[in-house]
Length: 232
Image 1 (tube, rainbow, N blue to C red):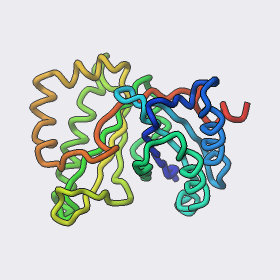
Image 2 (tube, rainbow, N blue to C red):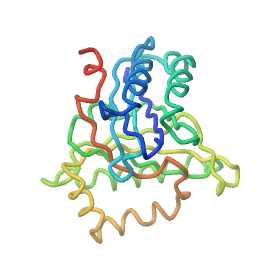
Image 3 (cartoon, helix red, strand yellow):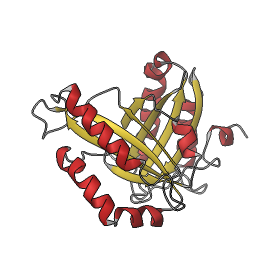
């Protein structure tokens, strides 16, 4: 079975760089990430900065079972440790089982990873959500066969609904895509094409606007920022 993949996003105080060895927050960051890595069922862990907003840290964790993911102690201690480094805004955690590829397979397929979350009212019918999913998959995979296209794509419905002020129910369903691009420039070039705008425009028009911490961003994960590096 594919692992349960969790993405944790946390907004740091802009004055703090926990990845700088000379930073006061460096030891706190290493302790916090080590806390997650030491939890039972943690199969792998990577982290990166958001390209557009470097004050955001994104941590990707693969869990063996849903029970491992749901265990509260590790997450609670991580948030407590990170509190001096972050803003007072909430830590965001999303989990899902991705397909047709695992999140790790996509993250290793190309340097630049697009993380896109589409939100829709929780009151939507299964037919409405299925239609939007089909359309979004078609757009996201449309450049796979091109030399300068996306290299790998996977997606999943997040297990938990998201609070949303514009949804009639106050909740939104969340569809998450992971796309591996050769570079940020290539992805921007694709988004600027008339073909992409024509196909993606109607999808975005049906979706709710992004909420705090969830939308579209890029990150560049590497083996240097991974579970294996913590064990050296």
